[in-house]
Length: 193
Image (cartoon, rainbow, N blue to C red; front, side, top):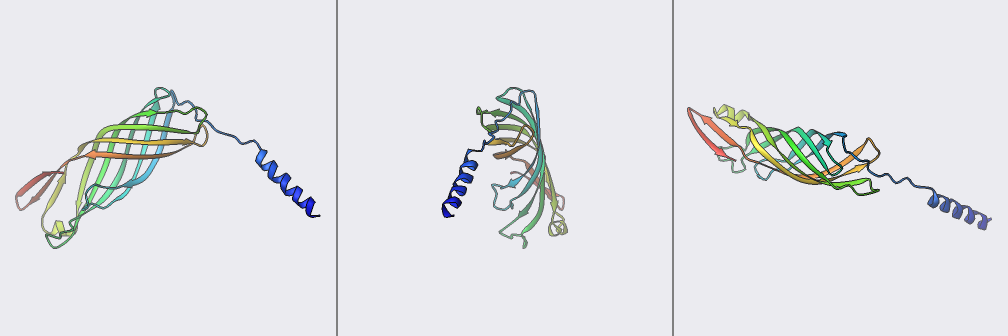
């Protein structure tokens, strides 16, 4: 009886090991559009600004197998604080950014692989808006933040589940600075941050 049970287990194991496995290769994306939704994190360089979630969308057109043109936009909202509490409080308000970027994407297709690495460079603008906290408004301070030029450098990979669905992993760095103007009691000061 035990020999028969052992043979059944061996037969089942060999059957599972020898079952054909479908290996899916990424399709050629020349002349095709990609569109996607992006949910990621924002980690500012400044310790006075808290990290947050970024929600956005992307679209790209495959010019060649190796090169694509893209566009992306999104939204993030950051809490701005003053840890020194120079004015007796730390909450200054909320900074909202809406980027609009044009991307150049260099894809590296790997033959018979569902994974395609890529590099990305983007240029565009970030539209900023600052909503002062109640304490800042109470003091009569207005904060104005200008739209700013932005550049993005990144890399990632697309993992093709099938011809129509991709899971994407990307890391990037966005560089941008802008003019911030503080107005209070008829006086104003502008700083580039």
